[in-house]
Amino acid sequence: MTRRILHVVTNVGHYDAPSHATGLWLSELTHAWEVFEKRGFEQRIVSPQGGASPLEPRSLRFPSYDKTARAWRDDPARMALLENTLRPDQIDAADHDAIYFTGGHAVMYDFPESEGLQRITREIWERGGVVSSVCHGYCGLLNTRLSDGSLLVADRKVTGFAWQEEVLARVDKLVPYNAEEEMKKRGAHYEKALLPFVSHAVVDGHLVTGQNPGSAKETAAKVAALL
Image 1 (cartoon, helix red, strand yellow):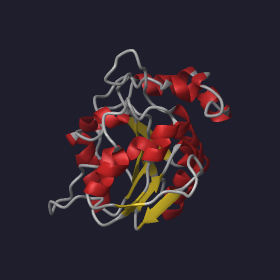
Image 2: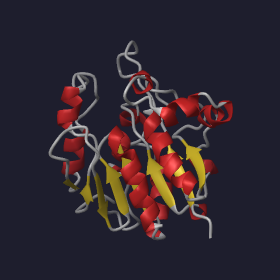
Image 3: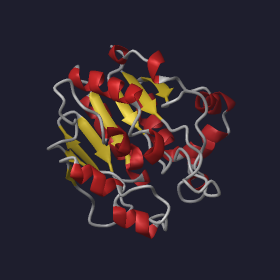
């Protein structure tokens, strides 16, 4: 049976300060897409509002702007996927075996309160599917509750972009909140690598999370292994 992956991307293009652009961290999508594509998985892209997903300018520079990211930007058909993402109400969770939340600081604004994304995530999880995220994508898991009212991340091991990494990236004064701290407040057992910006992924049952942009391939590989 062909496995189906649902990628989640942002619709936001700037921080609270409009002069500071942000968006989807492209390689976090392209690295995972390549891993899943090589395994013959079917893939779709959804966003909180549907439609266009802007790209994070910093993700279009070395070293993040690698072969897979360049190839995606050079392919009109692939770029069209990011101009015409699906809305949550167009998604039947039963059609997907895994959900994968991409990052970029933009997702801090539109992922956490999306009831549509929460519904899809809950339904995939409760069917035994894989829920996964990379980098700031874990903001999409902050407020997802299961049918019994409990938070999905409560008492589970997770990782995601660390506050130390925010400081080193010099965006700690721009971000709307401390995602690492918010995850801990929800009862999650947050973990991170000893060194910032190195690949690190955590598996807890059928929950898979990656720490930073460099973790996308490892995260996707662990998702694929579970599937």
